[in-house]
Image (cartoon, rainbow, N blue to C red; front, top):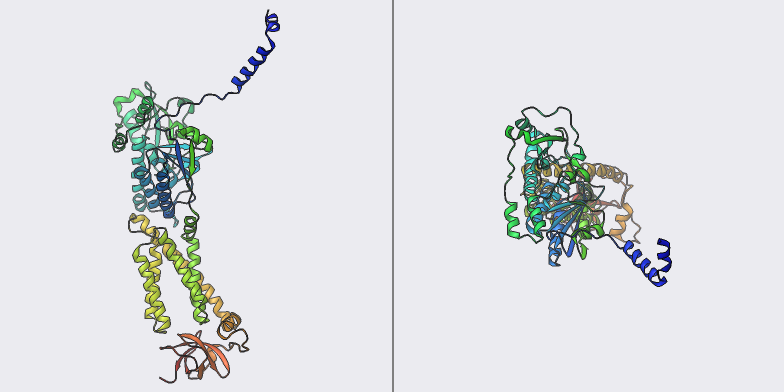
Length: 551
């Protein structure tokens, strides 16, 4: 019967039926509707990559304002960072909570350790790439282990921040603290009636069950958690209403304190142990599967297309860090600052040893301008830092040009210069612990740069005394390419004090003099000396010091 029916089916209709069926088979599966509180037509993506510092915060502030001016309805912070500075992190969290639109998403793609996790928790929801990892947000010091008292000071603002985020975004407060503090030991419990999941510490566990928790770590069975997690109460109500939330109601909801009561023995029969989440000797670090089961992650997003589908967006625009911001970020890194300190000190030494060209003096000024100017552009330098540096440079210049040999102005200027440079590593609004770390880091950078500069200067001075460095270049700069004279290779220490000579160039205070048909570097002692003036040697050594014979 089936065969006779087929043979009597008209050919054109059969072809049309096959085309329709193939079209239906090729049609994409319908996608789930995007909730109104998540949906955004125009989306801005602000990448956060690499170590987080004050430049990152300044850049994000600029990009956030630009995205909002362009009409972005949702802000996505694409995070890939190993962590960073505490104050910059707290500033970024403040921007997200108070300056950004309500619709903020943290896209961990693929890593968000330390500061990255804290920033992600500040956003309205978190999505992750399939290979993402985040957590491990305890404060660390480049100087080694942090004493307990200092660690408590550093942890206090971080804990306050993540707890505030948990209350705003309806995460479990106990869980987010395990990102920050070692010693937070948590167990996951399930309500036998409602399936609700909560995290409890040792004290609450003993209060509920009357016995200590298991000594052996009980692994959480993922099978017990499938289908258990639901929207937070606020988001659930919004999803059912399918409307955009009122901003005032959200603000009120965010300011509410924690409302979950502590469990006691009266509720013992309502809860059962699922497993241990974190032991007291480690920090919480999560992969996508665990983060979803614990209610921290809303979805998995692999690429821009999936992000666009998640938000129901029409356009997605990236707002990246500018090249100038990246350059400033490079300049304020501590290895570059050490190099700039070395360049500054070595150039000053070479300019004093080979005076007259101005080339090395210019190099030292450029190095100092970058050393102080880059932190100023990044918002890391206060007015007093710049003032100390300017006063220090002025006193050093006074020592070299007006009062050579007195040392008082030079030493005072060097101290002010060092204080100003160290000041660019700290800020007045930091917590005590981080300010101390900034001061220590600044001192280490300055001392390391000074030590390495000393080694370079020692090496150069040995070759200068042997006449093996820079003579031809300095001579051409002073006397011209065609002059046949050469700077003497006789060590200054062999020139007797009281020897009479004549200045070849002006000594202001450095220049060159003739002594017995030999051209030598010299520095005037006291007032400046014009060219062609008779001079007398008053001091020998690394630098030959002279004075005019005619007072």
